[in-house]
Image 1 (spheres, helix red, strand yellow):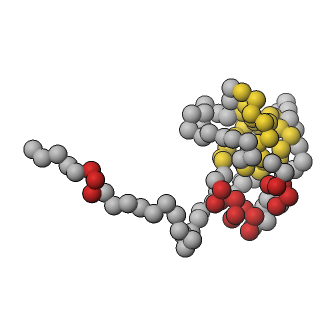
Image 2 (cartoon, rainbow, N blue to C red; image 1 turned 90 degrees about the vertical axis):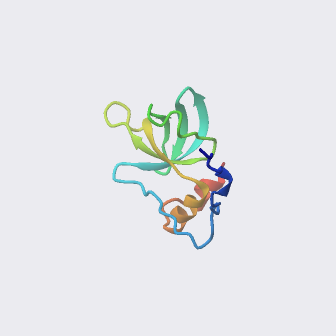
Image 3 (cartoon, rainbow, N blue to C red; image 1 turned 45 degrees about the vertical axis):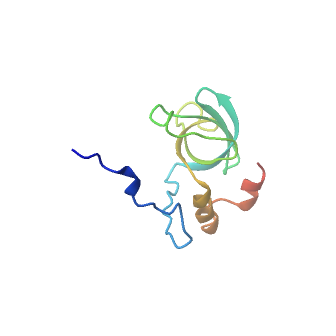
Length: 116
């Protein structure tokens, strides 16, 4: 039996300007935020668009798959119950090309991103 030659795979371009980007928009009850500090473990300190600073927890299903850095823009779900103003949970992390779509739809102000 012959081995398959893996070198003959077609190379895909990493991105083009004519590509349509489908961006996940925040749903009802979710808020956009920017990571301002990594607290360790699976906790992040996030400055949200509504003006509050929340401690965001990364759930177990995203813990090893969704890596976050300082300045990343995320979608967070505030914890309803005891501390909705100060705690929340990570739902999604935006990539750089998705931020342009958010700014075009005026969901996130430009001065919000330039702080960090």
